[in-house]
Amino acid sequence: MKAVKVQYRVKQEYIDTNKANIQKVMAALKANPIEGMYYATFTLDDGQTFVHINMSKDAETMSKLQNLEEFKSFRMALKASEPLVPPKSEALNLVAAGFDL
Image (cartoon, rainbow, N blue to C red; front, side, top):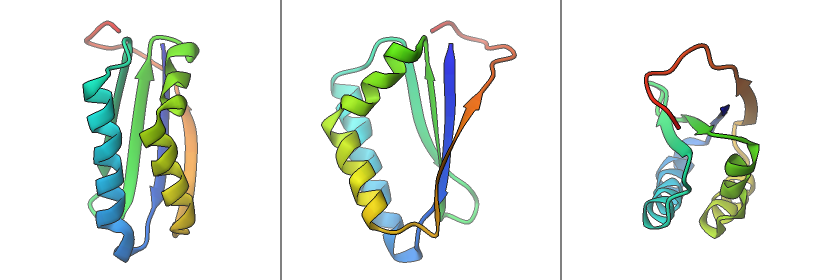
């Protein structure tokens, strides 16, 4: 299993736009699921810090997200918004899970 966390902080005025762009990605994934992938986005209590978690059965499955048009649009818009803290990606190492991918 591959797992990645991406965290960043957006400007106050970009929060709603970022949420809307994330919803477009999620709608596309619901319409055409990527088998073997769990993908979710959260905010921290400040409402400006976003955390994306992608858990996939392997690197090939994880890379399929990069090809999704809605995800490409989301990333371009986020970059153009000039986040207060740019996206930082961290690999997560699985200890145990209560589910199978």
